[in-house]
Length: 305
Image (tube, rainbow, N blue to C red; front, top):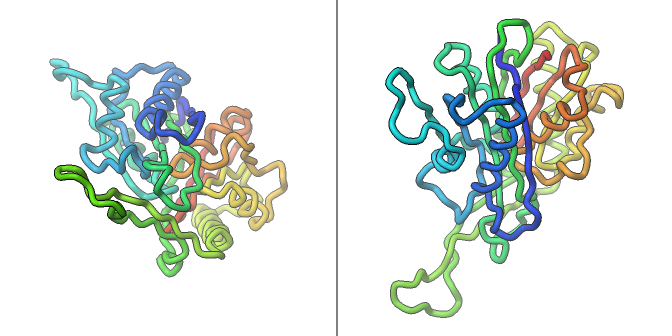
C-alpha cells in the first residue's frame, strides 16, 4: 500500500516577462495534472506548494492559498458532511517537491485525504534588476492518490550536506533607487542575487550519488536492482552524471530533453512527467527517484508502478 501518481504535468512560460508568473504557471500545471488524472478540484483534500521564487517576492498570504483559490478547490462554505481542503507552502528549493510528496503521502496513508496535489513553480520576480537567475519560468504539478497494492512510492530519505551550503546562495536585499523618490513612493525595491561557486554542480552529483547508494543499501538493494533512475536538479547535467556515477547503463537513466531544462523547484515534477510521458516509469519494476539542490540537500525514494 502506497502513494501513487495519478497524473503529472508541467508548463513553461513563453518568455521571461511576468505576464506568466509563478502563480499563473502553477495554476496551469495543477489544472493539467488534474485533467490527466481524471480528477476535479472537489476531489483534492490537500494542496502543497513547493515554489520558491514568487511573483513580486510575495510572502503573505501563502502562495498555496492563492493557487487553491484559482483552481477552485474547496471554495465557499464547507459541505455539511465534508472536511473541505487545506493548503500550505513548503520551501526547500529544488528538493521541496519531493518533500511535499512525502508529506502528502503521510496524509493519504492515514486516510485523512483521498487525493493530494503537489505544485511547484518559479518565475523571476523582476528580470530587470535581479542578478544571475538562470532558471526558466516554469511549473509542475502531480496528483497523488492511494493504492492498496504494492505499487507507488516507498520510504523517503532526505539529507543535508551543510558543509557545502556556501556553494550556492540566493540573497534578497533592499536596493535603494539612485534618484530620490517623491513622498509615499518606495525608495527602492527587493533584489535577488544568486551566487553559485564553481564546484557546486560537481559536489551536488557526489552528494546525490552518496545518498542514492546509501538509500539503496538500506533497502537491501544495489544499483543493479534499479531499472530506471529519475534524477532531478536545477542543472540538467546532474541527472545523467549521477546515473553514470552509479554505473547504470545509458538506457536505465531518464534523460531530460531541452524542453525540461531550466526548471528549479519544479525539477522533480518535470523529471517524473518525462518518465511517465515516455512510458518508462510504467515499464520499470523498480525506479529510483533522486532530487538534489542547494544546501546541499538530497532526497531519494523508490517508486514501483
